[in-house]
Amino acid sequence: MINKVISGADEAVADIPDGAILMLGGFGLCGIPENCISALLRKGVKDLTCISNNAGVDDFGIGLMLKTHQVRKMISSYVGENKEFERQLLSGELEVELTPQGTLAERIRAGGAGIPAFFTPAGVGTEIAEGKEVREFEGKKYLMEKWLKADFSIIKAWKGDTAGNLIFKGTAQNFSPMMAAAGKITIAEVEELVPVGSLNPAQIHTPGIYVQRIFQGKDYEKRIEQRTVSQ
Amino acid sequence: MLDKNQIAKRIAKELKDGYYVNLGIGIPTLVANFIPEGINVVLQSENGLLGIGPFPTEENVDADLINAGKQTVTMVAGSALFSSAESFAMIRGGHVDLTILGAMEVSENGDIANWKIPGKMVKGMGGAMDLVASAENIIVAMQHVNKAGESKLLKNCSLPITGLACVKKIVTELAVLEILPSGGFKLLERAPGVSVEEIKQATEGKLIIDGEVPEMDV
Image (tube, rainbow over all chains, first blue to last red; front, side, top):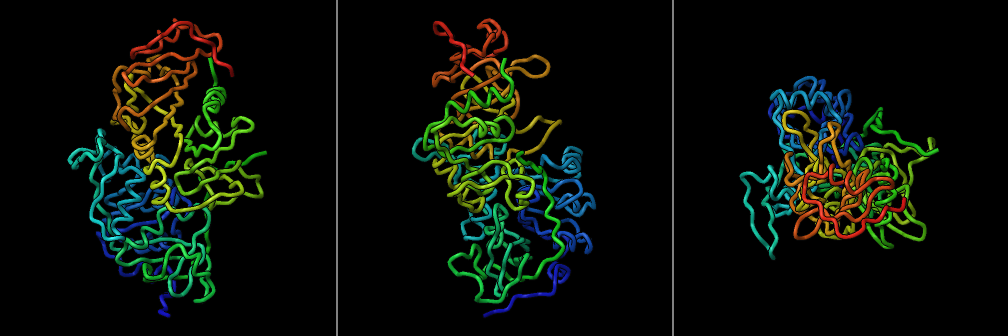
């Protein structure tokens, strides 16, 4: 089996150049690639385009990269948890493409699946439809949306084997499987790196063909945005 | 006048046995607390979960298990986990029976605005545009008037639109209203102690009153 294991986050991101297009997995702070975000901060790479559902919070996740002005453009669906994001957006420092969440997921899926465009009902008649082709199918209007692809996709999985097969936990899966396929180079950090053969092939979420680099992550903080408990 | 919990409780009466339901952030999330006895529904979370359970106890908090509002949750028996692409395939494909979400404005033909206040607030649409464009049945939970006392049930939305002609029903602190296919807010029920006249005052769009309007049972 092909061995894709590398030493860690710094090696994983070492060749990411200024101006790269990145996809980063996660929904809010759930399932974000914490180790690689830290490594990108250390590396100081800039002018990045980041495709990610959210932009972290002010002091965690992608929010940290916004503070250091490493991000030139964000493609996201919801950024409401991040004041610095909103400030940079309203002041024009940061370019932002807001995309409906399902459209974002499908654009990424399309990018990895070799489908250049598709039609969706989301956003018809809204300002995000401006400049996009609208076509009618069976009496209903749909908007043409184009695929998204990345130079590097950076994701976090729960378990992964040395061949890059991945399993996610809970709702930490979110955008990561589609991003894995849509990245020219996909970096997977995992909570538990296991030998090939120890994962059940029928339970793999992301087959190793989509993953080029994998490493054993460490020191996961797994911060919770809205800790809500019942009595 | 209803409080947030009462609005949620009234909306919960719209649930039917066997429904798959997507609950938005805010008041819609509270609907889960008032599911009537004998009614089995499955709650969908757009971030990749069917079968949202109650909030966890302190020792069962799991950072890897959250709802669309980023709150920690649990799963009921029989839950399923999946990717965001799968989640929105469910939504766009019309497999979710009912969507309940909040709004800043709704127009008399069912347009909804809930994602942006130009120059002031840009949070993004999240999954709202996908949901409203696809759902057959959309109920909006909202306040009838804004903090300045201005109606949020309008002839035309003034804020950027999230979706066109999609809202079917609205529950506010004052009333339950249906949006007629031909346009207009048909007043179905009044909140306890609220008069038809008060609802008229609070509704800028076309209000349709047909006979006696009953008080709602909450």
